[in-house]
Image (cartoon, rainbow, N blue to C red; front, side):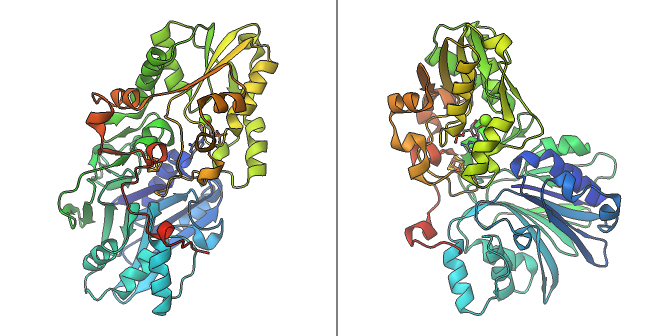
Length: 462
Ligand code: 5GP
Ligand code: SF4
Ligand code: MG
């Protein structure tokens, strides 16, 4: 998901909508904005892309105020229903509060069961709603103390933006698995919170800093303060944000996503070079690594696969059927580049293997005489429980096949993945050992840094 918050600007909701637009890649299912104008809250939410939900001046006119928070949804828990669309808003004894959440809680079902027994009436099936109830039943008086009380009970990954009549709050989970960035508008001095720095660029805000793991930033009046309810924590940022999820023009935790991907390409070329005539990225996610691969290997980079930009990211479409259809709608082979050539395809990951299989078949049908595949992540062997929608283990190609079996399944002459040392060198570390314990890489290693409470208790939110 993508989250945005704007505090202290005239067109807060328009800026929030622009920010969401820049974060569209983080979730394409639904979008919503809640604003406040010092008198009351306003909200508008809908299913679909940001541009579809906020296409109309009349809609924007229903969201007045100096502050607004927004969310776009990428479902990891909960169905595609309007009542699951965030920000979630509730009226409390202290007033209204809206919350937008990126990430996934690992004990949401467990907490929900206990809350339902206590009489809490849930209205959605998202994990985010447990925050709403934990804040409601907290015995503390102030909103902040109630929020801290709530976050001390949840486990999992969360980058949150909350809005009350008097303050905007940003918070990251103690390990900082998902990103959250603080920015400021140069003229108005408005404060901005966003999932990725590319959302600051679109609205002309300056980068101030990443919110720290486990930090709460409280913006009220025209000031800002920081609270660290968990003390100092040691971060485990999601390495897959660099590999795939974030937009390449974003800078996260001090690293340019683009540079990281390009360096992975350098490393891949060094580790698993092969004789070929062209390097072809699987667009868009494979492009920066393919460029790095081409530079390092000296083999020309060509657009041998053309992407139709009017189709969203295939992975995010909900059913297998649509996903299969989506791949064909999205990519076409460029015969002029491929015919008679030995081709190296570069992509970011192999999940189920369906995209790769189709692309390889397409590239061969366009006349390629050899097809080699290079992947800028290690093999994806485990599901993510922290906010990326990887399928269950049995559906992951790398969980059920060895390297040769995978190569056969997708129909390539050779297949190689980046090594862990190569990946972490590309992120500026000496190698895997030096980076150990600094990132989450559980979908590749199975080393889950946050307890999987619901999974262990076999609990799901139905
Ligand atoms: P597959 O067909 O192997 O399941 O899909 C792999 C492709 O899906 C890659 O090209 C990758 O860019 C794309 N993809 C889109 N969304 C995701 C995601 O959330 N996780 C992963 N691992 N890959 C994704
Ligand atoms: Fe990121 Fe993978 Fe960890 Fe999920 S499991 S947070 S995708 S590194
Ligand atoms: Mg891709």
